[in-house]
Length: 88
Image (cartoon, rainbow, N blue to C red; front, side, top):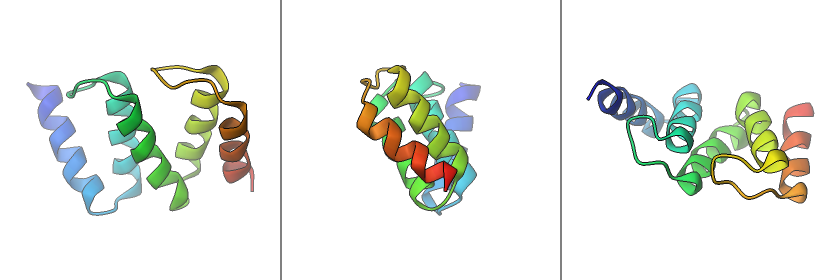
């Protein structure tokens, strides 16, 4: 119940555009923290945060695509795309 409450509060903050909250919602979806695991939703939230400039989200997306983890399929092209986002 506590995890669900944390997820909801974080989701509400993310919905207002707070980058750190967007990143956290993405990781919560990937891990299934307070919500059913959903790799697509996790990647969607992380991508939104990364596109708005949060380098930690771009770094995590790079790692996910490079390794293929949490239900995200390995994809070298996407891994390189996100690596370029956080290195530049």
